[in-house]
Length: 499
Image (tube, rainbow, N blue to C red; front, side, top):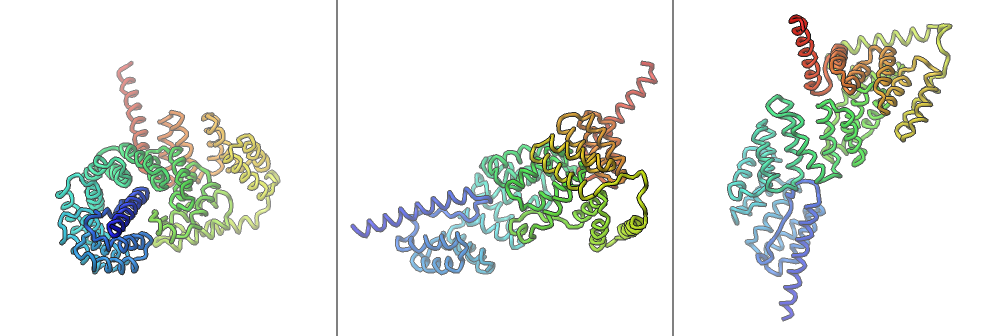
């Protein structure tokens, strides 16, 4: 009777542990690839306690202990497929690919239709570079159970890597239909739809937003989902919405370097060198090891250094610009244009050191002006709009040629809804820095917001002529220009017909 009681107690503890592990795995980000749901009746009662410790060791990453305990439990329960499966997972996590493969095969020999094992074996094969074999595993999972969502998701991953976006989307849709709470499938469905539209293979970029927004509701604390939404909104030309998404991502993880970089790019295109510099310097300080450990997108240092150098030049910090452009040249293969620009900056520095100030030139302390601009930026970030306005106006009084003060005053007017006043300030700022392509894009963006598509299209074209390319998918810009061309053609036809 006592023995029976101990067995029941052990089974109760095991069942409770298994349930808690499942709940824990479900709460974590990522596919439930390591979840094990044993059937208590399959194991010998004497192996339960050992198996519990093996599971705990595996969950904390102690693979050696897990493997020892699995072997001890297998001595008591030789034909238990779940124990062999756990041993395979521990070998895989430890990097012992040969023994992991042998244990996966052994578990499938015990039960050919063991779906969690077959799915995990497919993931193992994919991670070790055997993509075709992994695809076969997922296809076999689907054949065994057409309602198994994990197999559809992982099959879709492989198809997406191969460039077969249509069939990848079909598999992601199947996974989300079978499990509407499948975060990874919802996320990758949105990204695959975006990639297909961006490559001109069908659909619209906006179609991807529905799946990504569903994913954001499933795991709102995941910073990458907000980052992805921001990237897609940039492609659609919705810079204000994109900035909000990148800031939301950084609220979830302030060390998401790619979000800092994208936010810097946005501020550059809004003609804002100060905030651009700030975000780039933060991104540069973030340890790449942290980025890799989180599987975050890596940031290409070359374009980051290029924008940083340009912003220093716009702000008149020629020594900083010169040093940064030298770093840029060291990263480039065809660096002749950069070297020529470095030579020009060196001439400017020498000429500036020899040149005496004009009698009519304003006399001011550059450090005081910069302090006022920095103060105004902080005030505007904190919501003190009147204080920010006063700081920028004071900076402009000291230096009427201050691009930053003029630009930031325009931004305050834009934020208050005065687009006409903002455009006046932006035009004045652009006249102060005519070679800064960011000021051109910024004015084009505000013209578009003001429902002046023809003017916006022409200004975007000027940006393209200066920068040599568009920063994001230019479809919405091309659409503006096409609409303008159609309208002019229509007006010409009406004129010819005498209407």
